[in-house]
Amino acid sequence: MNSILKASVTTVLTLASSGQAIIAQVGDCSVDAMLVFDGSASMAEITFETGLNTRIVEARKPVRYAMTNITNFRRVGLLTYGAGPLGACENLITKFPPIEDAADPIVNSIDTLEPSGLTPLTQAVRRAAEALKYQIRPGVVVLVTDCNETFGGRHCEMAQSLIAMAHDLTIHIIGFHAELDFFAWNSPEQNSDTAITVARCLSNETGGTFVTTESIDELVSARQRTLGCPLFG
Image (tube, rainbow, N blue to C red):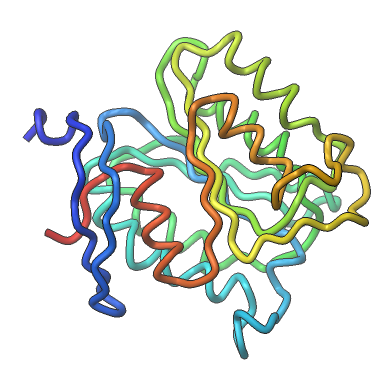
C-alpha cells in the first residue's frame, strides 16, 4: 500500500454526485496538509453560477464528497478565515493541525461557518504553513478562495520568503467562482496583468497547482488533484 500511496500516478475519480469520470493526479499522501477555507463575506453571495444557493452552500458539497476518502490516506488540518467573532481581518482560526481521520471535523467546521469579514489570504496561508511546521517538515497547503486579498498582503513576496525558509512546502490554489476585481482595495500586488487572483503567485513560486473551478464537480476534482489521494476505487 505504501508504494501505491507514494507513487505519482493517474487515477480515475468517479464522482458520487454525477457518475462523471474525471482524470486526476495522485501525489504523495504521506505528507501532511492544511486546507485553508474561505469564510469571508463574499461567500454569502448568490451569483448567476450558483443559482439559488450562496457560494458557501455550493463550496460545502465537495467537502462532503471528497474529504472522507482523502483523509483515509492523508493527515489534514483546517484553517478558516473571514468568519468569526473578531474584527473583519482578524478571524484567522486554526481549527486543528493535521490529524488522522479529519473528514468529520472538517465537514462539521465548514458546515457551521457563517460568512463574514474580509480576505486576509496572505496571513491565512502563512499561518497554515506554520501549523505544518514548514521550516522542518514537508507540507502542503490548499487554499480555497473566491476572491482576492483585501487586507494588504503581498502574496508573491511572502511566497519567496516561505520558500527560502521551508523544508519542502507546496501551495495549491483553488479559485471557486473567482473573478479579478480591478477596483479591489488593499491588494498592493494586483494589476491589470494579474490572472483571476494575485494568490496565483503562491502556487507559481512553490511549484503548486492553480485551478479555477465553476461547478461542484470541478471543485471535487480540484481537491483530488491538490490533496493528491486516491478517491472512489
